[in-house]
Length: 405
Length: 172
Image (cartoon, rainbow over all chains, first blue to last red; front, top):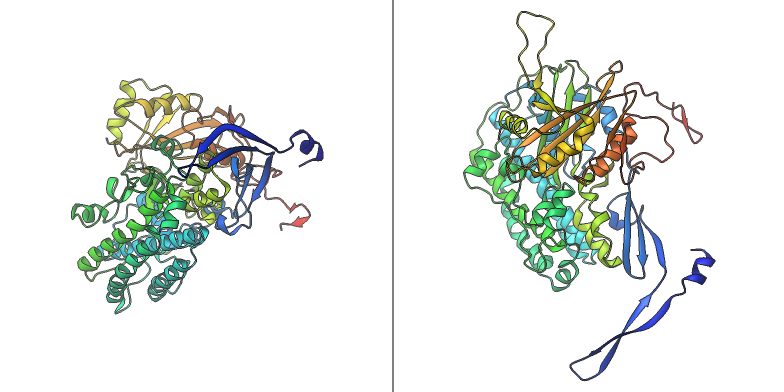
Protein backbone atom coordinates (compact mmCIF):
# COMPACT_ATOMS: atom_id res chain seq x y z
CA UNK A 1 0.00 0.00 0.00
CA UNK A 2 1.47 3.30 -0.99
CA UNK A 3 0.38 6.58 0.47
CA UNK A 4 -0.88 7.85 -2.87
CA UNK A 5 -3.08 4.84 -3.23
CA UNK A 6 -4.53 5.51 0.17
CA UNK A 7 -5.31 9.09 -0.74
CA UNK A 8 -7.08 8.21 -3.93
CA UNK A 9 -8.94 5.23 -2.52
CA UNK A 10 -10.14 6.48 0.83
CA UNK A 11 -12.41 3.97 2.49
CA UNK A 12 -15.89 5.28 2.01
CA UNK A 13 -19.04 4.34 3.84
CA UNK A 14 -22.23 5.02 1.99
CA UNK A 15 -25.73 4.24 3.08
CA UNK A 16 -27.27 1.98 0.54
CA UNK A 17 -30.76 2.61 -0.72
CA UNK A 18 -31.95 -0.57 0.79
CA UNK A 19 -33.52 -0.49 4.22
CA UNK A 20 -34.58 -3.68 5.89
CA UNK A 21 -37.48 -3.81 8.27
CA UNK A 22 -37.02 -6.48 10.88
CA UNK A 23 -39.86 -8.53 12.31
CA UNK A 24 -39.72 -6.55 15.55
CA UNK A 25 -40.44 -3.37 13.64
CA UNK A 26 -36.92 -1.95 14.02
CA UNK A 27 -35.28 -0.60 10.92
CA UNK A 28 -31.82 -1.76 10.01
CA UNK A 29 -29.76 0.16 7.52
CA UNK A 30 -27.55 -1.83 5.19
CA UNK A 31 -24.23 -0.10 4.82
CA UNK A 32 -22.22 -0.63 1.71
CA UNK A 33 -18.62 -0.47 2.85
CA UNK A 34 -16.01 0.04 0.16
CA UNK A 35 -12.38 -0.36 1.01
CA UNK A 36 -9.18 -0.50 -0.90
CA UNK A 37 -8.09 -3.78 -2.48
CA UNK A 38 -5.25 -5.24 -0.51
CA UNK A 39 -2.85 -8.05 -1.34
CA UNK A 40 -2.39 -10.54 1.46
CA UNK A 41 0.12 -13.36 1.60
CA UNK A 42 -1.58 -16.47 2.87
CA UNK A 43 1.33 -18.72 3.82
CA UNK A 44 3.96 -20.03 3.14
CA UNK A 45 3.97 -20.81 6.87
CA UNK A 46 0.29 -20.53 7.66
CA UNK A 47 -0.88 -23.71 9.44
CA UNK A 48 -4.00 -23.96 7.30
CA UNK A 49 -1.97 -24.41 4.11
CA UNK A 50 -1.07 -27.90 5.44
CA UNK A 51 2.52 -27.54 4.39
CA UNK A 52 4.68 -24.94 2.76
CA UNK A 53 2.49 -23.26 0.22
CA UNK A 54 1.69 -19.64 -0.42
CA UNK A 55 -1.50 -18.17 -1.77
CA UNK A 56 -1.36 -14.57 -2.87
CA UNK A 57 -4.82 -13.24 -2.11
CA UNK A 58 -6.38 -9.99 -3.08
CA UNK A 59 -8.94 -8.90 -0.55
CA UNK A 60 -11.56 -6.18 -0.54
CA UNK A 61 -12.27 -5.91 3.16
CA UNK A 62 -13.32 -9.38 4.21
CA UNK A 63 -14.03 -10.59 0.70
CA UNK A 64 -11.40 -12.36 -1.36
CA UNK A 65 -11.37 -10.96 -4.90
CA UNK A 66 -8.53 -12.95 -6.38
CA UNK A 67 -6.21 -15.81 -5.47
CA UNK A 68 -3.01 -17.08 -6.96
CA UNK A 69 -1.38 -20.19 -5.48
CA UNK A 70 2.41 -20.15 -5.53
CA UNK A 71 3.99 -23.55 -5.12
CA UNK A 72 7.36 -25.15 -5.43
CA UNK A 73 8.69 -24.59 -1.93
CA UNK A 74 8.90 -28.34 -1.45
CA UNK A 75 10.07 -29.24 -4.95
CA UNK A 76 12.51 -32.16 -4.68
CA UNK A 77 12.93 -33.10 -8.36
CA UNK A 78 11.23 -36.49 -7.96
CA UNK A 79 10.84 -36.91 -11.71
CA UNK A 80 14.45 -36.06 -12.46
CA UNK A 81 15.60 -38.51 -9.80
CA UNK A 82 13.45 -41.13 -11.53
CA UNK A 83 15.61 -40.77 -14.63
CA UNK A 84 18.82 -41.25 -12.69
CA UNK A 85 18.22 -44.22 -10.39
CA UNK A 86 17.34 -47.83 -11.08
CA UNK A 87 13.71 -48.91 -11.21
CA UNK A 88 13.71 -50.48 -7.75
CA UNK A 89 15.77 -47.70 -6.22
CA UNK A 90 13.09 -45.18 -7.12
CA UNK A 91 10.51 -46.88 -4.92
CA UNK A 92 11.45 -45.05 -1.67
CA UNK A 93 11.06 -41.71 -3.47
CA UNK A 94 7.43 -42.52 -4.20
CA UNK A 95 6.74 -42.60 -0.45
CA UNK A 96 7.68 -39.01 -0.22
CA UNK A 97 5.28 -37.25 -2.46
CA UNK A 98 2.00 -37.96 -0.73
CA UNK A 99 3.47 -38.89 2.62
CA UNK A 100 0.04 -39.50 4.14
CA UNK A 101 -0.71 -42.28 1.68
CA UNK A 102 2.67 -43.83 1.00
CA UNK A 103 1.26 -47.33 0.49
CA UNK A 104 -0.94 -46.08 -2.33
CA UNK A 105 2.02 -44.33 -3.95
CA UNK A 106 4.08 -47.52 -3.79
CA UNK A 107 1.17 -49.37 -5.34
CA UNK A 108 0.77 -46.90 -8.21
CA UNK A 109 4.44 -46.95 -9.14
CA UNK A 110 4.75 -50.72 -8.81
CA UNK A 111 1.70 -51.25 -11.00
CA UNK A 112 3.09 -49.00 -13.72
CA UNK A 113 6.39 -50.90 -13.85
CA UNK A 114 4.58 -54.24 -13.62
CA UNK A 115 2.43 -53.25 -16.58
CA UNK A 116 5.56 -52.89 -18.72
CA UNK A 117 7.06 -56.10 -17.38
CA UNK A 118 3.85 -58.12 -17.60
CA UNK A 119 4.45 -59.88 -14.28
CA UNK A 120 1.72 -61.90 -12.64
CA UNK A 121 1.30 -61.00 -8.96
CA UNK A 122 0.53 -63.82 -6.48
CA UNK A 123 -2.98 -63.66 -5.08
CA UNK A 124 -1.93 -63.33 -1.45
CA UNK A 125 0.23 -60.34 -2.38
CA UNK A 126 -2.76 -58.71 -4.08
CA UNK A 127 -4.80 -59.23 -0.91
CA UNK A 128 -2.16 -57.73 1.35
CA UNK A 129 -1.69 -54.84 -1.07
CA UNK A 130 -5.40 -54.09 -1.01
CA UNK A 131 -5.56 -54.29 2.79
CA UNK A 132 -2.60 -51.94 3.17
CA UNK A 133 -3.84 -49.48 0.55
CA UNK A 134 -7.27 -49.29 2.14
CA UNK A 135 -5.90 -48.97 5.68
CA UNK A 136 -3.70 -46.17 4.44
CA UNK A 137 -6.71 -44.54 2.82
CA UNK A 138 -8.43 -44.57 6.21
CA UNK A 139 -5.36 -43.05 7.84
CA UNK A 140 -5.13 -40.37 5.18
CA UNK A 141 -8.81 -39.45 5.42
CA UNK A 142 -8.51 -39.34 9.21
CA UNK A 143 -5.83 -36.66 8.87
CA UNK A 144 -7.83 -34.82 6.22
CA UNK A 145 -10.93 -34.83 8.37
CA UNK A 146 -9.14 -34.11 11.65
CA UNK A 147 -7.09 -31.21 10.35
CA UNK A 148 -10.16 -29.84 8.62
CA UNK A 149 -11.90 -29.66 11.98
CA UNK A 150 -8.77 -28.00 13.34
CA UNK A 151 -8.87 -25.38 10.58
CA UNK A 152 -12.43 -24.56 11.52
CA UNK A 153 -11.72 -24.36 15.25
CA UNK A 154 -12.67 -27.85 16.44
CA UNK A 155 -9.58 -29.10 18.23
CA UNK A 156 -10.83 -32.23 20.00
CA UNK A 157 -11.77 -34.43 17.03
CA UNK A 158 -8.25 -33.99 15.68
CA UNK A 159 -6.82 -35.67 18.78
CA UNK A 160 -9.32 -38.51 18.59
CA UNK A 161 -8.43 -39.14 14.97
CA UNK A 162 -4.75 -39.27 15.74
CA UNK A 163 -5.52 -41.97 18.29
CA UNK A 164 -6.97 -44.27 15.62
CA UNK A 165 -4.30 -43.32 13.13
CA UNK A 166 -1.69 -44.28 15.69
CA UNK A 167 -3.05 -47.81 15.75
CA UNK A 168 -3.05 -47.92 11.97
CA UNK A 169 0.58 -46.81 11.92
CA UNK A 170 1.46 -49.40 14.54
CA UNK A 171 -0.06 -52.01 12.23
CA UNK A 172 2.13 -50.81 9.40
CA UNK A 173 5.13 -50.76 11.67
CA UNK A 174 4.50 -54.40 12.46
CA UNK A 175 4.29 -55.40 8.82
CA UNK A 176 7.15 -53.36 7.37
CA UNK A 177 9.03 -51.60 10.15
CA UNK A 178 8.27 -48.05 9.07
CA UNK A 179 5.60 -45.70 10.29
CA UNK A 180 5.33 -43.20 7.46
CA UNK A 181 7.50 -44.07 4.47
CA UNK A 182 6.84 -47.74 3.97
CA UNK A 183 8.29 -48.87 0.61
CA UNK A 184 6.48 -52.08 1.45
CA UNK A 185 4.59 -52.71 -1.78
CA UNK A 186 7.30 -53.74 -4.21
CA UNK A 187 7.45 -54.35 -7.91
CA UNK A 188 6.13 -57.90 -8.18
CA UNK A 189 4.26 -58.13 -4.87
CA UNK A 190 5.01 -57.06 -1.34
CA UNK A 191 8.28 -57.04 0.58
CA UNK A 192 7.44 -59.82 3.04
CA UNK A 193 4.49 -61.72 4.41
CA UNK A 194 2.34 -60.40 7.23
CA UNK A 195 3.70 -61.45 10.65
CA UNK A 196 1.69 -64.02 12.68
CA UNK A 197 -1.38 -62.46 14.30
CA UNK A 198 -1.28 -59.36 12.09
CA UNK A 199 -4.42 -60.18 10.14
CA UNK A 200 -6.44 -60.80 13.29
CA UNK A 201 -5.22 -57.48 14.68
CA UNK A 202 -6.43 -55.77 11.51
CA UNK A 203 -9.80 -57.34 12.17
CA UNK A 204 -9.80 -55.96 15.73
CA UNK A 205 -8.88 -52.56 14.32
CA UNK A 206 -11.86 -52.73 11.98
CA UNK A 207 -14.22 -53.60 14.85
CA UNK A 208 -12.97 -50.73 16.98
CA UNK A 209 -12.87 -48.27 14.14
CA UNK A 210 -16.51 -48.83 13.21
CA UNK A 211 -17.57 -47.70 16.68
CA UNK A 212 -15.23 -44.73 16.74
CA UNK A 213 -16.35 -43.67 13.29
CA UNK A 214 -19.87 -43.08 14.59
CA UNK A 215 -18.39 -40.78 17.22
CA UNK A 216 -16.69 -38.68 14.56
CA UNK A 217 -19.91 -38.30 12.66
CA UNK A 218 -21.65 -37.12 15.82
CA UNK A 219 -18.78 -34.84 16.75
CA UNK A 220 -18.32 -33.05 13.47
CA UNK A 221 -20.48 -34.01 10.53
CA UNK A 222 -23.80 -33.01 12.11
CA UNK A 223 -22.30 -30.41 14.41
CA UNK A 224 -24.29 -27.23 13.85
CA UNK A 225 -21.26 -24.95 13.80
CA UNK A 226 -19.39 -27.24 11.42
CA UNK A 227 -22.36 -27.39 9.06
CA UNK A 228 -22.72 -23.59 9.16
CA UNK A 229 -19.07 -23.17 8.27
CA UNK A 230 -19.02 -25.68 5.40
CA UNK A 231 -22.46 -25.88 3.78
CA UNK A 232 -22.92 -23.64 0.71
CA UNK A 233 -19.24 -22.69 0.89
CA UNK A 234 -16.81 -23.23 -2.00
CA UNK A 235 -19.30 -24.78 -4.38
CA UNK A 236 -17.72 -26.58 -7.36
CA UNK A 237 -20.25 -27.30 -10.12
CA UNK A 238 -19.80 -30.45 -12.19
CA UNK A 239 -18.61 -28.65 -15.37
CA UNK A 240 -15.98 -26.78 -13.43
CA UNK A 241 -14.82 -29.98 -11.75
CA UNK A 242 -14.39 -31.70 -15.12
CA UNK A 243 -12.78 -28.66 -16.74
CA UNK A 244 -10.17 -28.54 -14.01
CA UNK A 245 -9.61 -32.28 -14.16
CA UNK A 246 -10.58 -32.91 -10.54
CA UNK A 247 -10.62 -36.49 -9.38
CA UNK A 248 -11.29 -38.43 -6.21
CA UNK A 249 -13.43 -36.99 -3.40
CA UNK A 250 -13.27 -33.54 -5.03
CA UNK A 251 -15.10 -34.87 -8.09
CA UNK A 252 -17.46 -37.14 -6.15
CA UNK A 253 -18.30 -34.26 -3.83
CA UNK A 254 -19.76 -32.53 -6.88
CA UNK A 255 -22.07 -35.48 -7.41
CA UNK A 256 -20.17 -37.39 -10.11
CA UNK A 257 -20.29 -41.10 -9.43
CA UNK A 258 -16.81 -41.99 -10.64
CA UNK A 259 -14.23 -44.01 -8.79
CA UNK A 260 -11.38 -45.81 -10.53
CA UNK A 261 -11.83 -48.76 -8.17
CA UNK A 262 -15.34 -49.29 -9.51
CA UNK A 263 -15.26 -47.88 -13.04
CA UNK A 264 -11.80 -48.92 -14.23
CA UNK A 265 -10.95 -51.60 -11.69
CA UNK A 266 -7.40 -52.74 -11.10
CA UNK A 267 -5.98 -55.61 -9.09
CA UNK A 268 -8.73 -57.20 -6.96
CA UNK A 269 -11.26 -54.37 -7.01
CA UNK A 270 -13.18 -55.87 -9.92
CA UNK A 271 -13.89 -58.97 -7.86
CA UNK A 272 -14.73 -57.00 -4.73
CA UNK A 273 -17.07 -54.68 -6.60
CA UNK A 274 -18.86 -57.59 -8.28
CA UNK A 275 -19.33 -59.08 -4.82
CA UNK A 276 -21.11 -55.83 -3.87
CA UNK A 277 -18.75 -55.52 -0.93
CA UNK A 278 -18.45 -51.73 -1.10
CA UNK A 279 -20.23 -48.65 -2.38
CA UNK A 280 -19.08 -45.33 -3.74
CA UNK A 281 -20.31 -42.43 -1.62
CA UNK A 282 -21.24 -39.38 -3.68
CA UNK A 283 -22.07 -35.85 -2.59
CA UNK A 284 -25.79 -35.16 -2.37
CA UNK A 285 -26.06 -31.54 -1.34
CA UNK A 286 -27.78 -32.70 1.83
CA UNK A 287 -26.83 -29.71 4.01
CA UNK A 288 -26.49 -27.06 1.32
CA UNK A 289 -25.64 -26.88 -2.36
CA UNK A 290 -24.28 -29.86 -4.27
CA UNK A 291 -20.49 -29.65 -4.47
CA UNK A 292 -19.88 -27.55 -1.36
CA UNK A 293 -17.23 -28.15 1.28
CA UNK A 294 -19.57 -30.24 3.40
CA UNK A 295 -20.18 -32.66 0.53
CA UNK A 296 -16.47 -33.18 -0.03
CA UNK A 297 -15.91 -33.91 3.62
CA UNK A 298 -18.95 -36.17 3.67
CA UNK A 299 -17.52 -38.24 0.81
CA UNK A 300 -14.24 -38.70 2.69
CA UNK A 301 -15.94 -39.69 5.92
CA UNK A 302 -18.20 -42.21 4.22
CA UNK A 303 -15.27 -43.60 2.23
CA UNK A 304 -13.52 -44.61 5.43
CA UNK A 305 -16.36 -47.03 6.16
CA UNK A 306 -16.24 -48.42 2.64
CA UNK A 307 -12.52 -49.04 3.05
CA UNK A 308 -13.27 -51.02 6.19
CA UNK A 309 -15.67 -53.17 4.16
CA UNK A 310 -13.00 -53.81 1.53
CA UNK A 311 -10.49 -54.77 4.22
CA UNK A 312 -13.03 -57.16 5.72
CA UNK A 313 -13.64 -58.76 2.32
CA UNK A 314 -9.92 -59.36 1.93
CA UNK A 315 -9.57 -60.71 5.46
CA UNK A 316 -12.29 -63.25 4.72
CA UNK A 317 -10.79 -64.32 1.39
CA UNK A 318 -7.06 -64.31 2.11
CA UNK A 319 -5.23 -67.63 1.82
CA UNK A 320 -1.63 -68.66 2.39
CA UNK A 321 0.73 -68.49 -0.54
CA UNK A 322 3.73 -66.63 -1.95
CA UNK A 323 3.78 -62.85 -1.59
CA UNK A 324 6.18 -61.80 -4.32
CA UNK A 325 6.66 -62.87 -7.91
CA UNK A 326 10.01 -64.18 -9.00
CA UNK A 327 11.76 -61.07 -10.29
CA UNK A 328 15.49 -60.38 -10.52
CA UNK A 329 17.22 -58.05 -8.07
CA UNK A 330 18.40 -55.79 -10.88
CA UNK A 331 15.40 -55.07 -13.01
CA UNK A 332 15.65 -54.62 -16.73
CA UNK A 333 12.26 -53.35 -17.79
CA UNK A 334 11.25 -54.14 -21.39
CA UNK A 335 11.10 -51.12 -23.72
CA UNK A 336 7.81 -49.31 -23.99
CA UNK A 337 5.64 -46.88 -22.16
CA UNK A 338 2.70 -47.26 -19.82
CA UNK A 339 0.37 -45.07 -17.84
CA UNK A 340 -1.37 -46.39 -14.74
CA UNK A 341 -3.84 -44.34 -12.76
CA UNK A 342 -5.04 -45.60 -9.40
CA UNK A 343 -7.50 -44.21 -6.89
CA UNK A 344 -5.45 -42.50 -4.20
CA UNK A 345 -7.18 -40.93 -1.19
CA UNK A 346 -6.90 -37.58 -2.98
CA UNK A 347 -7.79 -38.66 -6.48
CA UNK A 348 -6.13 -40.26 -9.45
CA UNK A 349 -2.45 -40.87 -8.90
CA UNK A 350 -0.97 -41.42 -12.32
CA UNK A 351 2.43 -42.84 -13.15
CA UNK A 352 3.64 -42.57 -16.72
CA UNK A 353 6.79 -44.61 -17.20
CA UNK A 354 8.97 -44.94 -20.29
CA UNK A 355 11.68 -47.55 -20.59
CA UNK A 356 14.26 -48.21 -23.28
CA UNK A 357 15.00 -51.69 -21.97
CA UNK A 358 17.71 -50.64 -19.54
CA UNK A 359 18.18 -50.61 -15.79
CA UNK A 360 17.28 -46.94 -15.47
CA UNK A 361 14.03 -45.34 -16.56
CA UNK A 362 13.83 -42.85 -19.42
CA UNK A 363 10.90 -41.03 -17.85
CA UNK A 364 9.00 -41.41 -14.61
CA UNK A 365 6.15 -38.97 -14.59
CA UNK A 366 3.99 -38.51 -11.53
CA UNK A 367 0.54 -37.06 -11.91
CA UNK A 368 -0.22 -35.97 -8.39
CA UNK A 369 -3.90 -35.49 -7.58
CA UNK A 370 -3.14 -32.67 -5.13
CA UNK A 371 -1.38 -30.70 -7.84
CA UNK A 372 -4.37 -30.85 -10.14
CA UNK A 373 -6.97 -30.34 -7.42
CA UNK A 374 -5.19 -27.27 -6.10
CA UNK A 375 -5.61 -25.38 -9.38
CA UNK A 376 -9.35 -25.05 -8.79
CA UNK A 377 -8.68 -22.58 -5.95
CA UNK A 378 -8.03 -19.86 -8.53
CA UNK A 379 -11.62 -20.26 -9.62
CA UNK A 380 -13.53 -20.79 -6.39
CA UNK A 381 -11.74 -18.50 -3.92
CA UNK A 382 -12.73 -15.18 -5.54
CA UNK A 383 -15.99 -14.07 -3.98
CA UNK A 384 -15.53 -16.03 -0.78
CA UNK A 385 -14.96 -14.50 2.64
CA UNK A 386 -11.42 -14.71 4.01
CA UNK A 387 -12.68 -16.94 6.83
CA UNK A 388 -14.30 -19.23 4.27
CA UNK A 389 -11.06 -19.37 2.30
CA UNK A 390 -9.64 -21.49 5.12
CA UNK A 391 -12.62 -23.81 4.86
CA UNK A 392 -12.23 -24.07 1.08
CA UNK A 393 -8.49 -24.74 1.13
CA UNK A 394 -8.95 -27.37 3.84
CA UNK A 395 -11.69 -29.10 1.86
CA UNK A 396 -9.39 -29.59 -1.15
CA UNK A 397 -7.24 -31.76 1.13
CA UNK A 398 -3.89 -31.14 -0.47
CA UNK A 399 -0.57 -32.59 0.54
CA UNK A 400 2.12 -30.13 -0.43
CA UNK A 401 4.69 -32.89 -0.85
CA UNK A 402 2.63 -34.07 -3.77
CA UNK A 403 1.83 -30.73 -5.39
CA UNK A 404 5.54 -29.93 -5.52
CA UNK A 405 7.00 -33.43 -5.87
CA UNK B 1 -14.51 -48.65 -25.87
CA UNK B 2 -11.18 -50.35 -26.32
CA UNK B 3 -8.27 -48.71 -28.11
CA UNK B 4 -9.21 -50.12 -31.51
CA UNK B 5 -12.75 -48.80 -31.18
CA UNK B 6 -11.54 -45.35 -30.18
CA UNK B 7 -9.06 -45.25 -33.06
CA UNK B 8 -11.74 -46.30 -35.56
CA UNK B 9 -14.06 -43.64 -34.23
CA UNK B 10 -11.33 -40.99 -34.48
CA UNK B 11 -10.77 -41.96 -38.11
CA UNK B 12 -14.49 -41.97 -38.83
CA UNK B 13 -14.99 -38.43 -37.54
CA UNK B 14 -11.72 -37.31 -39.16
CA UNK B 15 -10.24 -35.96 -35.96
CA UNK B 16 -7.92 -33.04 -36.80
CA UNK B 17 -4.22 -33.82 -36.62
CA UNK B 18 -4.56 -37.60 -36.24
CA UNK B 19 -1.38 -39.10 -37.65
CA UNK B 20 -1.61 -42.74 -36.71
CA UNK B 21 -1.53 -45.24 -33.90
CA UNK B 22 1.22 -47.17 -32.15
CA UNK B 23 0.37 -50.45 -30.50
CA UNK B 24 2.55 -52.70 -28.40
CA UNK B 25 4.09 -55.67 -30.16
CA UNK B 26 6.06 -58.76 -29.28
CA UNK B 27 9.79 -58.90 -30.20
CA UNK B 28 10.56 -60.17 -33.67
CA UNK B 29 11.96 -63.72 -33.18
CA UNK B 30 14.12 -63.47 -36.31
CA UNK B 31 15.70 -60.15 -35.47
CA UNK B 32 17.64 -60.58 -32.22
CA UNK B 33 18.18 -56.84 -31.79
CA UNK B 34 14.46 -56.14 -31.78
CA UNK B 35 13.12 -56.06 -28.22
CA UNK B 36 9.52 -55.26 -29.17
CA UNK B 37 7.42 -52.63 -27.50
CA UNK B 38 5.34 -53.13 -24.36
CA UNK B 39 2.80 -51.15 -22.40
CA UNK B 40 -0.07 -49.02 -23.68
CA UNK B 41 -1.14 -48.20 -27.23
CA UNK B 42 -1.34 -44.52 -28.12
CA UNK B 43 -2.35 -42.27 -31.00
CA UNK B 44 0.05 -39.88 -32.68
CA UNK B 45 -1.27 -36.36 -33.14
CA UNK B 46 0.14 -33.28 -34.83
CA UNK B 47 1.21 -30.92 -32.03
CA UNK B 48 -0.05 -27.86 -33.90
CA UNK B 49 -3.55 -29.30 -33.96
CA UNK B 50 -3.62 -30.75 -30.45
CA UNK B 51 -6.16 -28.24 -29.01
CA UNK B 52 -8.57 -28.94 -31.86
CA UNK B 53 -8.04 -32.68 -31.39
CA UNK B 54 -8.77 -32.44 -27.67
CA UNK B 55 -11.90 -30.44 -28.39
CA UNK B 56 -13.18 -33.02 -30.85
CA UNK B 57 -12.48 -35.82 -28.35
CA UNK B 58 -14.36 -33.90 -25.67
CA UNK B 59 -17.38 -32.98 -27.76
CA UNK B 60 -17.88 -36.22 -29.68
CA UNK B 61 -20.71 -38.17 -28.07
CA UNK B 62 -19.14 -41.58 -28.30
CA UNK B 63 -15.64 -40.55 -27.28
CA UNK B 64 -16.77 -38.12 -24.57
CA UNK B 65 -13.24 -37.52 -23.22
CA UNK B 66 -14.24 -34.94 -20.65
CA UNK B 67 -11.14 -34.97 -18.50
CA UNK B 68 -7.45 -34.45 -19.18
CA UNK B 69 -5.94 -36.78 -16.61
CA UNK B 70 -2.36 -35.91 -17.41
CA UNK B 71 -0.46 -33.61 -19.71
CA UNK B 72 3.30 -33.80 -19.74
CA UNK B 73 6.38 -33.83 -21.88
CA UNK B 74 9.22 -36.34 -22.27
CA UNK B 75 12.74 -36.02 -23.51
CA UNK B 76 13.38 -39.51 -24.94
CA UNK B 77 17.16 -39.25 -25.42
CA UNK B 78 20.01 -36.79 -25.53
CA UNK B 79 20.56 -37.18 -29.26
CA UNK B 80 16.88 -37.33 -30.19
CA UNK B 81 15.64 -34.44 -32.30
CA UNK B 82 12.16 -34.39 -30.81
CA UNK B 83 10.43 -33.90 -27.50
CA UNK B 84 7.23 -35.80 -26.82
CA UNK B 85 4.04 -34.32 -25.50
CA UNK B 86 2.08 -36.98 -23.65
CA UNK B 87 -1.58 -36.49 -22.90
CA UNK B 88 -3.77 -38.97 -21.05
CA UNK B 89 -7.47 -38.48 -21.66
CA UNK B 90 -10.14 -39.99 -19.48
CA UNK B 91 -13.82 -40.36 -20.14
CA UNK B 92 -16.00 -40.28 -17.03
CA UNK B 93 -19.15 -41.24 -18.92
CA UNK B 94 -17.74 -43.93 -21.21
CA UNK B 95 -15.09 -45.18 -18.75
CA UNK B 96 -12.22 -45.42 -21.18
CA UNK B 97 -8.82 -43.85 -21.61
CA UNK B 98 -6.78 -42.64 -24.53
CA UNK B 99 -3.08 -41.89 -24.60
CA UNK B 100 -1.90 -39.22 -27.04
CA UNK B 101 1.62 -38.49 -28.16
CA UNK B 102 2.81 -35.48 -30.14
CA UNK B 103 6.31 -34.83 -31.44
CA UNK B 104 7.77 -31.37 -31.37
CA UNK B 105 11.32 -30.52 -32.49
CA UNK B 106 13.73 -29.54 -29.73
CA UNK B 107 15.15 -26.80 -31.93
CA UNK B 108 11.80 -25.05 -32.23
CA UNK B 109 9.65 -26.24 -29.32
CA UNK B 110 6.55 -24.16 -29.90
CA UNK B 111 2.95 -25.33 -29.89
CA UNK B 112 -0.46 -23.80 -29.25
CA UNK B 113 -1.93 -23.93 -25.76
CA UNK B 114 -4.80 -26.25 -24.86
CA UNK B 115 -6.05 -24.13 -21.95
CA UNK B 116 -9.14 -22.80 -23.81
CA UNK B 117 -10.30 -26.41 -24.23
CA UNK B 118 -9.37 -27.82 -20.81
CA UNK B 119 -8.42 -25.51 -17.97
CA UNK B 120 -6.67 -28.39 -16.26
CA UNK B 121 -3.91 -28.01 -18.87
CA UNK B 122 -2.96 -24.63 -17.43
CA UNK B 123 -0.70 -25.85 -14.66
CA UNK B 124 0.50 -28.90 -16.57
CA UNK B 125 1.62 -26.67 -19.44
CA UNK B 126 3.36 -24.31 -17.07
CA UNK B 127 5.27 -27.25 -15.64
CA UNK B 128 6.16 -28.63 -19.08
CA UNK B 129 7.23 -25.15 -20.20
CA UNK B 130 9.69 -24.57 -17.38
CA UNK B 131 11.03 -28.12 -17.29
CA UNK B 132 11.44 -28.72 -21.05
CA UNK B 133 11.57 -25.24 -22.55
CA UNK B 134 8.41 -25.59 -24.57
CA UNK B 135 6.55 -22.42 -25.51
CA UNK B 136 2.78 -22.71 -25.39
CA UNK B 137 1.45 -19.94 -27.60
CA UNK B 138 -1.50 -18.11 -26.10
CA UNK B 139 -1.04 -19.46 -22.58
CA UNK B 140 -2.86 -17.12 -20.18
CA UNK B 141 -0.30 -17.31 -17.36
CA UNK B 142 3.14 -18.39 -18.60
CA UNK B 143 5.05 -18.07 -15.31
CA UNK B 144 7.22 -20.68 -13.66
CA UNK B 145 5.29 -22.94 -11.33
CA UNK B 146 7.62 -25.25 -9.41
CA UNK B 147 10.97 -23.60 -10.09
CA UNK B 148 12.08 -20.16 -8.89
CA UNK B 149 11.35 -17.37 -11.36
CA UNK B 150 15.03 -16.79 -12.07
CA UNK B 151 15.98 -20.40 -12.79
CA UNK B 152 18.23 -20.83 -15.82
CA UNK B 153 17.91 -23.81 -18.13
CA UNK B 154 15.38 -26.58 -18.54
CA UNK B 155 16.11 -29.22 -15.90
CA UNK B 156 14.20 -32.15 -17.37
CA UNK B 157 16.02 -32.06 -20.69
CA UNK B 158 18.53 -34.85 -21.00
CA UNK B 159 21.34 -32.43 -21.94
CA UNK B 160 20.75 -30.23 -18.89
CA UNK B 161 23.90 -29.28 -17.03
CA UNK B 162 23.51 -28.97 -13.30
CA UNK B 163 24.32 -25.48 -12.01
CA UNK B 164 27.45 -25.04 -9.93
CA UNK B 165 26.00 -22.37 -7.72
CA UNK B 166 22.69 -20.66 -7.05
CA UNK B 167 22.69 -17.16 -5.52
CA UNK B 168 26.09 -17.75 -3.99
CA UNK B 169 25.17 -21.20 -2.60
CA UNK B 170 27.45 -23.92 -3.91
CA UNK B 171 25.58 -26.83 -5.50
CA UNK B 172 28.57 -29.14 -5.90
